[in-house]
Amino acid sequence: MKVILTKTYEEGAQKGAEIILAALKNKPDLLLGLATGETPLGIYKRLIEAYKAGEADFSRARTVNLDEYVGCREEDSYRKFMFDNLFDHINLAHDSITIAGHKADPGAEVSRLRGFFERNTVDLQLLGIGPNGHIGFNEPGEALEALVHVTPLAEATVQANARWFADGAVPTQAITMGMGDILRARSILIMIKGESKRGVLRELLHKTTVTTQNPATFLHLHPDVTLIAEESLT
Ligand code: PGA
Image 1: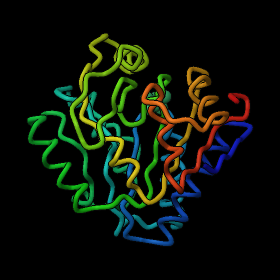
Image 2: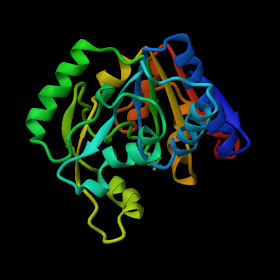
Image 3: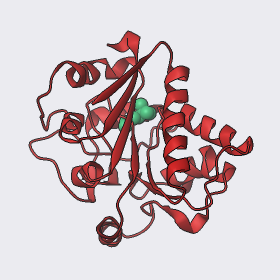
Image 4: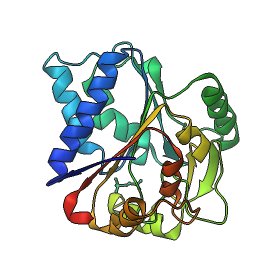
C-alpha cells in the first residue's frame, strides 16, 4: 500500500484529484469507480476545476458508483449527490454513468449490477471509509459478501449518516458493490478524512492483518492501493 500523508485535507484532495486526472489522461475511456460522502468532495471540486480550465476531458470516460440507498427520496439519493457535486459540471455522457436505482426493485438492481461487473473492470476505484472500516457499504461482520448485494446499514453507519438528514429519516438499507467487485479494480485510491476514522486508519497503517471486523483491511490483499490521509490522524 502506498501511503500519502498530508498536512491538510485540501492538500490530500489535490493529490487525489491529480491521481485521477493522470489516470484519465493515460486512458481517456477509463472506467472510474466513484464514492459519495464528505471525503471525495474536495477531489470532485478539483476535477471540475480541471475540466473548466480545459485540462480534463471526460467525454470518453465511464463511471460506476459504489453504492446507493434503497428506497430513499430522490433528493437524498447518491444519484443526486453525484449530479450536484460532479456530473452536472463536467462533460461526462449521461449514458456512461452507472448507479444503482434507489427506486428500482433491489433484486433486479443486484442482477443488473452483477452483470455490469461481469462485463466491466474498474480501472481506478475511489473509496472513502466509514468510522467502522466499511468500504462501500460492506459493513463489519462475521462474513463479507464478494458481489453486489443489498445490505442493512450498521448502526454506526446510520448514526454517521444522520448529519445528512435534517428530518432524521436516515435510510437503513443500501445496495453496494461487494468486496470482490472492489478488489477487482485495477487500482484503488482510498482517502480517509475525519477524526472518527482515526482507529480504522491506524489499524490499516500499523498492521497487515486482514479482518472482516474492519473491511478496509482487505485492501492489504490488493497490489495497487494508494491511501491518502492527514498526517495528524496517524
Ligand atoms: P464520509 O463517508 O466521507 O462522509 O466520511 C465515508 C463512508 O462512510 O464511506
